Image 1 (cartoon, rainbow, N blue to C red):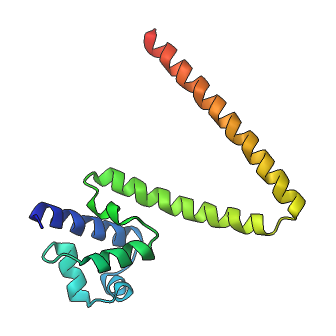
Image 2 (cartoon, helix red, strand yellow):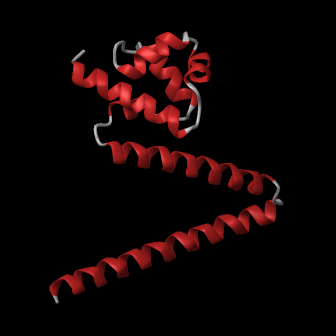
Length: 135
């Protein structure tokens, strides 16, 4: 593996760990390696094998491809969107499970209306942006 790729994986794993406020020791325990082995991953001295990368991705609900993201801001954005999505999704699922069958049907109908509304808003916004650029 190229050193550049190795360092990229190291940086992204370190960013993931620090964004979750997890110590190296705790992160190492989560993935089943010693702290020194994990530290060598973060330093880029050693590359985690595919199984370890898969385990890390699975524990955090991520796609393994994220470890190869070159753009640091895209990487951070992906982590943030995953967190927001997970929290919101869990709340929505919890609420949905507590609804009656009738209310579930109403919610589904309403969600279709809201999606149509969003599409119209986005189409109008795109048209407005296009007009403003011409002026």
